[in-house]
Image (cartoon, rainbow, N blue to C red):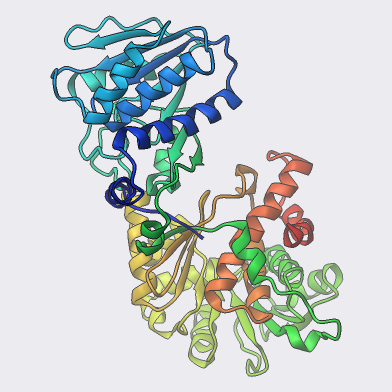
Length: 504
């Protein structure tokens, strides 16, 4: 997994690298600038006009070094650099050094702004490189710097941010001034992603982002702990174990799926198919009679357990034989279903996968939370989680609640979204960064429940089942979108691509 450090920790990593490599601060800036410039030239044509905005700190030093490299080594023809220094003499040492280097570069167009600023006209073919403020910012922008940010935001220029868009803080932006945050089209970030990148309200500022390796010292990277991680494809590849030639279905578990009600049999069907496509050896679906014909016809690989009521969940089968149990997709929220869910929670001795209507029934009767077996996997979307844990003002607040909720209730919380966050009972939070907007479609969550249930049944521990399930679900969604398009994507298309996702 890729660690996600706080901005404070990143400053410590930088300083350790400077001391123990050792390397001069200005040379570490040079290394970062070279990584940025190499990525920049892969993306943009040399004929475009580039306007570089630099601040007084090390982010400004990065910007000045980048401007020099693009002028000197990559021969971009039209580069204008503005260094905002309203308090002359307050430049950081690397910023002062790279200012000197830029000024000594033939052909460099450099302006140091100490008071009045006459902004350059910005057109749609222009590219702004933003180096005003970086990861060290801890308060909202104001005054002249806020005005410059607003000026850039009002233009049609393409904006590429260095490390972090100016005005955006690396973690919590709850008290920030949103109109004083730069809206980047691309953010090229150094070393590691920032927590802010994974929060929905920050998308307009971050844009598309990419990590650039700047060679931070491996000892401090390995020795610095964090609860925040980004799941990588390799993590899942290592967890999916090859099957023995002499394997049989009994070796991969028997899953029970409690799902479906009148008008919602499709949810049960999607979850059932996804479960079987994700490695479960056997699957029994417990559902009311109204779903029997649909399930037995469309998913003949699954066995069927008939509920006593024809329209919704009211009774439990004997659950002792099952290696994993999932509940919720299309279940409905009838009071009798709530009573049956309570009985399931009381009798279950293994972790469950709890989704959809099962979560809503628990939210309606919070006493049920105490009955959820330890290490169960809850898969709420933001509104479902708010019903469980209370309303949140933004994604950061909700994420903090989900992290604390998982620890308090000794469960795994899969907080679904564009960057689904899996919160573990140990307090770790692991983000997933694949998937696409086409997956925001009816039934996609039911598919995820089925994938996680199949992995859990086949022997993966709960946290591993959740992490692998989320990444495989996203990968299958990406494969399906490439084939179908995001607009036409259906939940069933995700199931159809699960096999390919396992092969990635």
